[in-house]
Image 1 (cartoon, helix red, strand yellow):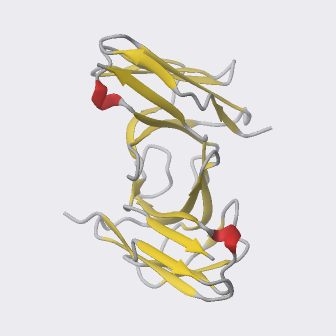
Image 2 (cartoon, helix red, strand yellow):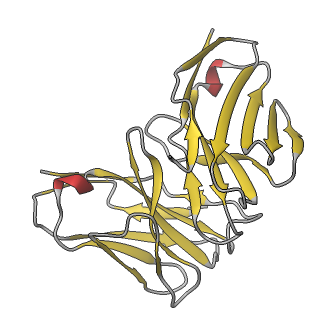
Image 3 (cartoon, chains in turn cyan, orange):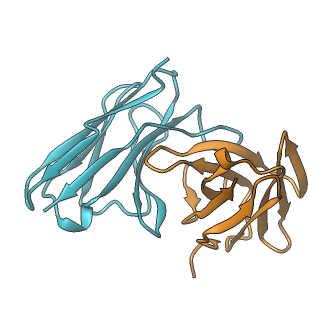
Length: 114
Length: 111
């Protein structure tokens, strides 16, 4: 009964380093999302994948890339980390579009860029 | 102007009281509205969704929607200390994939 699983849970990066956040869901959902959450800012959509094979930009895509590897997996890559990317990152999935469908979130990845 | 606005709180209510959480949104064509609860250090979880004007009740929770006023609220009756969390209002405009979240209201229920 895993739901949405994301790794790593905690990571410290130096400015300029790269890393990939991994996400997998076992609910056979079509749509997947990456959000970041900062104090006082709420959740902001970085990228989403409406279905396997498609990805689209959200509100704050700059500095990130994504890959929808298959229906289960959706990864987020930081090519050259910056301190402004220090945040909590949540992967999520839903059956299809969100109208009438619940978004299920992973447990979060705490990223610090120094 | 933020697209989804909430009072950041904290809102403090005594145990057993009604907690009232409010949210306004700017996009008039918004169709779907959600309330998520987020405990400290945890991920958000959906507690209510509402799509039509009026009230929707689920146990101790009631969501209220007024599209003319662009206003969504969540009432929690018989508040319990376990209700202490941050409540996120979320709005989806076109039934698609871009759900906009408010910054959340912190609720404290005092025993």
